[in-house]
Length: 408
Image 1 (cartoon, rainbow, N blue to C red):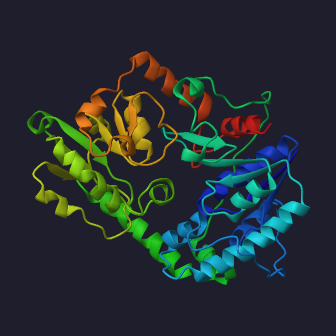
Image 2: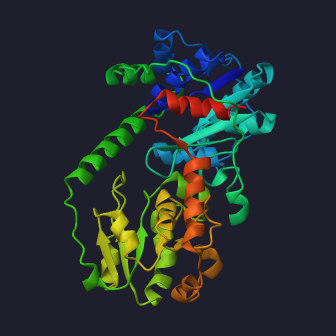
Image 3: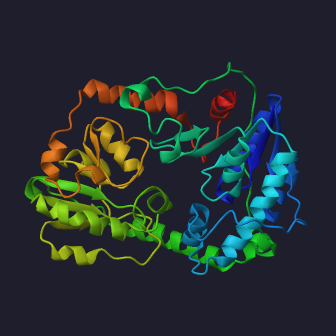
């Protein structure tokens, strides 16, 4: 078997390098495709194979436009207002990748997430076998799907009953001795080589700014005290956990361009319920956003840091765009009002807002019912048959063996 691993973020490098070594030990040929200068250096240190696109090919086609999901993803990630350069770069990259994969045959192409890769579109257009990876929706789990991640998975549009019968084909288990090797990544080395890399240089300072803002957000969240909530005093409420304002899950997989827009769209209907509305801000918000103006409504409570499980359990129902909190709520038998697209949309206690917008939300949500045993079976199926046990930061031979078994 011959495997291609597409260039991805440095944060996933340990995962893919160890996966490559594991697959090599089981007799699989693995190549990293078109890595940047920094990743190329790390691969060389461990004698891992890298293949490159023909960079002398500067031709381009008009495959991407300013409204393409890939272009929106990059503009969002790096806060680029002028999309013309991104369109030009990605169209040229698409041509190089298309030529490479047309001329070089692989049994599978492995991609993390896929939203930011031209190879996602190349693989679809060449009808290549691929698998996408992403973190799972429960602790220490991962997604691995041949169609995509999140709302793009192979099972995303199945009915509730069909989903319970869905499973991925797997090959027989192998037992090998394997030792995980962690990379000692130097930030200065990483930044220097990224700056030298032409493909990254244009967005380098935007990348640094985003990294700094994310670090500040994490530190800020750690310093917030955990809020104690008197649930009996609050009474009945709707729980609305926010996602990052410009989360790509919102922009690409919902009718909204921001979390602000989603809140403003549904808030009038939420206020009509007469219930309290607890809005929890996202802990890793990297933008200077503020929802404090919502406090002008007496029904609204804003919180920053609290036990999310308790917030779910005590709520009447949960409003969610499409994050993992929605599935977490379902696992606790809580009804979910979904604003975007998600792979858990077809369970019996989840309703899409687009179907009941302008109606009495409490009345509509009260009509949703399911036996606990059905929800238990639904969640167990995710844990046992859909997600793989493991985490990109907690690498084990068992994780890599579970991945290898799906490569069939």
